[in-house]
Length: 118
Image (tube, rainbow, N blue to C red; front, side, top):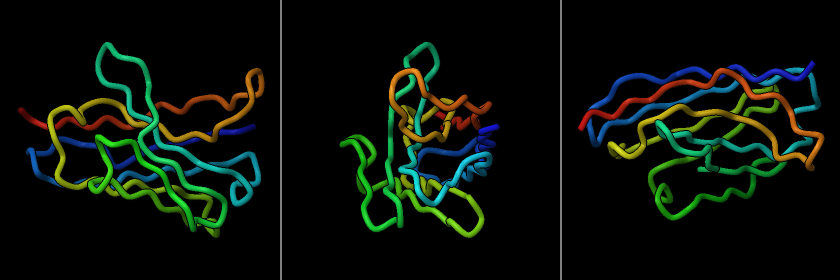
């Protein structure tokens, strides 16, 4: 059974930093592309970082590029998101998952909540 458990969220001042962690289980983690997603209050979930198998390539959308860093530890089936220079618009719940074809999606975890004071 595929499962994701996110942790590391919290309350932080603007300009602060946090590192989120995700522990994955139930699939061969090292062979999968992994993503972090952000869901702001009342908004749709959106991708904020991607890392390929092996970790040698990453992608970020413009709003977080240069501030967020995704990494992985395949020996521990873990995914990380280092977030720096946090802004109030980064507030929300963060989830990890692997992009899958329609109809084969993995279940979402509970996420971890980040609040950047404004």
